[in-house]
Picture 1 (cartoon, rainbow, N blue to C red):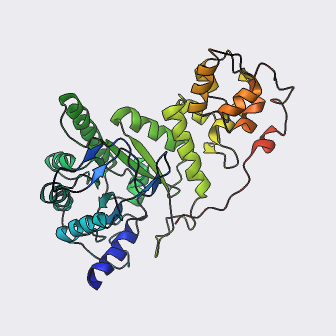
Picture 2 (picture 1 turned 30 degrees about the vertical axis):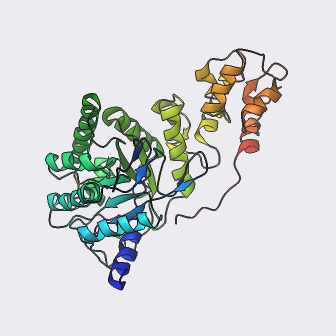
Picture 3 (picture 1 turned 90 degrees about the vertical axis):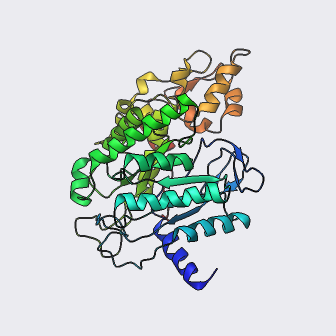
Amino acid sequence: MDDALKTKLTILADAAKYDASCASSGAPRRKAEAGGLGSTTGAGICHAYTPDGRCVSLLKILLTNYCLFDCAYCVNRRSSNVRRAKFSVDEVVTLTVEFYKRNYIEGLFLSSGIIRSPDHTMEQLIRVAKALRQRHGFRGYIHLKTIPEASPWLIEQAGLYADRLSINLELPTEASLERLAPEKDGAAIQTAMGQMGERILQAKEERRRFAPAGQSTQVIVGADASTDESLIRTSARLYDHYGLKRIYYSAFSPIPDAASILPSQSPPLQREHRLYQADWLMRYYAFSPDDVAGATESGMLALDVDPKLAWALRHRDRFPVDVNRAEREMLLRVPGLGVRAVDKIVAARRHATLRLDDVARLTSGLKRARPFLIAADYAPVRLTDRLDLRARLAEPPRQLSLF
């Protein structure tokens, strides 16, 4: 690799690090045909860990960090003084192929600043994916960040070559977009999401290929005054209306020469973590947005306890529950019990009456669960009503870093 290409890679890989929506799940299993390259396993990628412990990764870059837009929160905004660079289509293709051959990556995540026009930018992204698929027979994972203002025909073409497509909402309200990203149109973004969701569903029904791993989006946390409750309600609406696979929450990070309307500090990264936990409760634990709102304090999720524990502490009258008799839906509300643990409990109690030791063998979260459950040989004595229960179960403070 020559020095000029190394310099571009350094600049454009660093510029891409702020986009969190690059992990994948649900891509179909694929192997390259004779003379081709790559495969997908269906596992998550971008430095994610699979259940069997493997770490899988992808090349995560921008095509360019030049941009026509001047979004206040973006380090690559038009008025920013950052170093600029631009890959050619062939350079991205070559990097992807060569990195794959060296076993550095298993796929590509490609985004871009807006150059010339949304259609021109989208055309360049598509040319990369098309060249990898058709010229090199690349069967690995490809995630393309789409441009909402681009023509629907171009989005259709992108879905033919990419495993996943995404459009970043960035901010949860139209008012925040008008204030911090006036050149972006929230209605246009959500219209594009809706059209993409319809195409994905139609392709599944017709058994043809179009973004088989679905679509995702990213919301920035802490750049505006939105509460956690409003973020979660926005997420619930996006999941319901557009069938998104994932919503990613990215803690705002102060940028060089930032506008005065932006916060001077990042939000606690624990806030981002709590939003992911709340999102998980809605997707896998049958919590409604109102349930999650019931776990907040003035619209904000607690940082010292996770959302499920916060909900349980606010609804102590619903506990303790009997592991041998309670409905699955209520067991899912017990702090410390995950979906797998609950399913194991439900299966095991068909054959035997469960004691506390049995529950301990089925979950690693028994410490948090003890005040909220009853077993054959155990019932908490006024433990659920203890005034210091929250303090006893709260997580110790942790120092987290963004990068």
